[in-house]
Length: 558
Image (tube, helix red, strand yellow):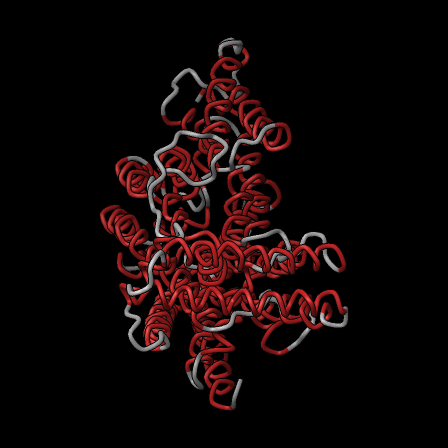
């Protein structure tokens, strides 16, 4: 990076931390710190909801996912609009009327304190793992830019975001999210323009899409019903629906967003905003990844997208031979792509597909070499976009896009940390240890909790960076818990006969069923949400039937 790029990144980071800290004046009370005094407008809440989802994982992981796997990941979101409509009708008005701080407070009123504590505990585990994964993405970028050790960069980005979250609370998180969304979309728009301007003369945008489509990169609908296939229209509409209902309706990081809205209607509008903008937004980001793939049809890509691993492997003569074969394979694919785009070469389509197959075999040989000699879990999908930016974007644009990645990361990290601190303080500390403390005391505990969760997330991030596509990793973490948590709320809202004992054991059975399925079957992770919810509800109902009226707790009898 050049001086201008450094200036843009540093200026952005300084501004965000300053802007977050200045929000301290709005966070003296616990309602101000944790819920922004329920005073935020719908558009700010809506942008904050989208920013919480649009993490650096989305920019780094989704673009890398599209580069390697095409557009089919978009099917993951097909259940989102339906989930949002259901939640707008049910959960949003209910939680607003209940005047709760966390989603889990209601469960104590409906069941007992054990159910509340257990569900909040599993939220803390799932979201703590998730925020660690979110920190991994910008840390990968920093490790490339600065050549720093990945662990050092993880703590640098994680703790810098923790600082303004500790002081500003949800007010700082929300308004910082709003500003960061504009930076993200502006940066990605500039990126799109630069990519298209880099295509060879005579190759248009439609030509690039035709190349990608020929290799199956533009497939957005797979109608096969296969539980072992990761992304199909059915896994998105059914598994994705359950995941989104669990995430937006039971996860404190999202419930807290619409609880900050001024009214029920504004809370609903904020969710509907996300419902109908999320899929187009995700489509656009995936398209960027596909266009990066097209860009590398005509420009030499790295043999793998992790420069440190390449530098290590190049010391071996065997890898140098692999590199020469890779360069030749790219030249063949480039010529075949140009010939196919021109429409003047006979049998050009077949030649292009064969050249791409040869290219992929050569690249896979390099990946296999690195796994054999260096890192058995090596996966470079998360390095694709940041490496592309650093090697191909003009001066100034690099700094802008790095700032956009930081913006995406910090918005999500801050929101998740604040939600973790809220659940820790309200569901555990206030409920179990200090129910009569002052607001100043609770805010202090919330700030301490934020800092501790920031440290925990940094530790998780160290291990998450090598688990594969980060966009998949974070949703896999969530899928182990969301369906079962959703099942508890279904028992609370829908099943009148449900009792505390049934809800508690149903939740445990649901989570256990998901873990068993993950180890002993090949079911893909989106279906875990359906499995966890169904097992929780069925087990919870059956166990509740064994509870006699005289066995009810005091809370349940009320």
